[in-house]
Length: 167
Image 1 (cartoon, rainbow, N blue to C red):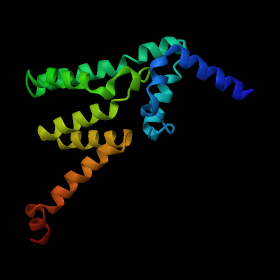
Image 2 (image 1 turned 90 degrees about the vertical axis):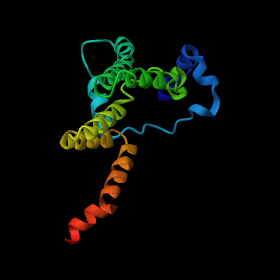
Image 3 (image 1 turned 60 degrees about the vertical axis):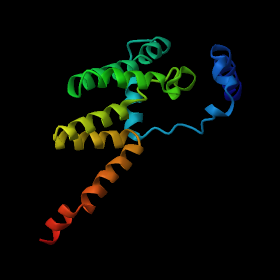
Image 4 (image 1 turned 90 degrees about the horizontal axis):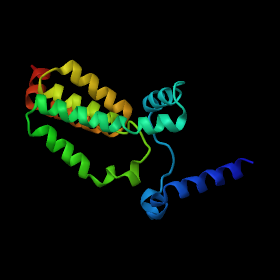
């Protein structure tokens, strides 16, 4: 019974969005890889009782676009008038943002927004906000942790820091 339901679901998705099924191995996914924080956030949002699932997914697919536009506006305000539009342009032309790859997904860029906030706060010497945003970005996805490790290594290896430890 479950196998028949699974086959029916696959047939539905192939019919609804045939582009994804014709792209070959580029979309070969090996399962869900969200962090526990991402699972908690997205699961909590998906269980909202106000909208039907299809209506909610259509609405939720705009969440990322709203986050990216807000990030562009913040960059314009905090960095300069050219930074926001450039960020939006580069985000829009990125081939990995194509609907064939991410269509129907929502809040895929939360970690990037947290990372952006962390870097902006770091540049403005708001270190508590920066650290908190780096921590959130790392909890949302693994790779921001590598950026934090690089910053930590830079600080630990600097002659100024080693001088303070030995002096």
